Structure formats: C-alpha cells, structure tokens
Length: 154
Image (cartoon, rainbow, N blue to C red; front, side, top):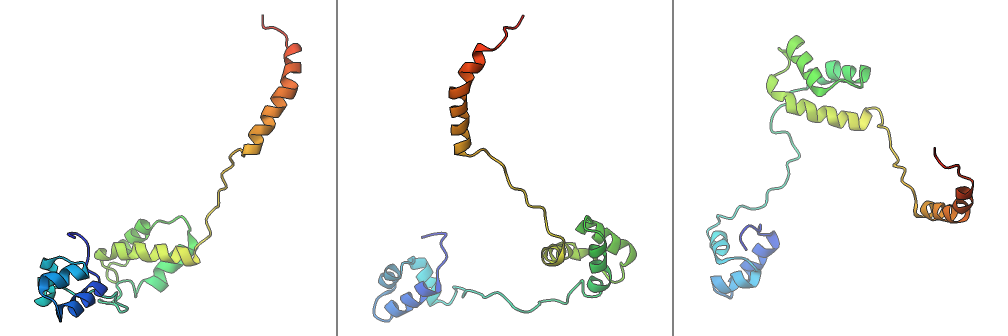
C-alpha cells in the first residue's frame, strides 16, 4: 500500500491486534504494510496534525489594512492587488514589508468576496430541444410552399 496515508483508525486497529498477534499478522489485519507497522512500534509514524486556529507570526498587514488598503478597495473596484502592493511599497515601506505580497493578495480576495461589488451573472442561451422540433415542423409545413414562389437567380 505504498503512497496511501495511514489513518488513525488503522493505527488503532493495529495496536489492538498487536496485543495478541505478531507484527506481520497485526499489520495484515489492520490493512497496513509491515514497514508501517515497524514505524508505529518505533514511534516514528507522525500523528495527524490538526489545523492551527492561532497565528504563527504577527499580522504583517495590521498597520495598513484598515487605514490604507480598505479605503483604496472601496474607492476603486478595478484596482489590482499588485497595484495596491506597489503603492504600499512606494509610500508606506516603513509599515509594510515586501515579503507580504501573497498575504495581501489573499486578504484582498477574501475582502472582495465578502464586501466587494457583486459580479455579473451570465446565462448561456442555447436552443432547447423543442425549438429544433418546432423549426423542423415549420420547414415541413411551409418550406414546400415557399419553394414554389422562389425566383430563380440570373
């Protein structure tokens, strides 16, 4: 099973079977390889990490977001994140670091999704099946009479 991640349930099943079975049998019953079983026994298998709910570093946009960026977004709907980034680097380089561009792009995308103008909705107009049948009916009924009244080209 190379390439597949081992689930917590497989580890629990392996540990349960390992109490009464040897390593190979317990691994087979749990649906994992013997190599993975050795890693579990040696505590080398890393547990699944949960997503953090806290920041790992201070917010790089804290000083410029509310006072500078949000008013720019409210004034101009067409301004790009790169344009705002260039403005911040040029006029507010003491408050803003250049390594925070991608963070700025993500935050602008989220802000536009929540507070920005709504996007235009386009409905594709394709002929329906009944439209085709109606045109076939029209051709059969009326096209024959139209052909009799056509003037030949000269």
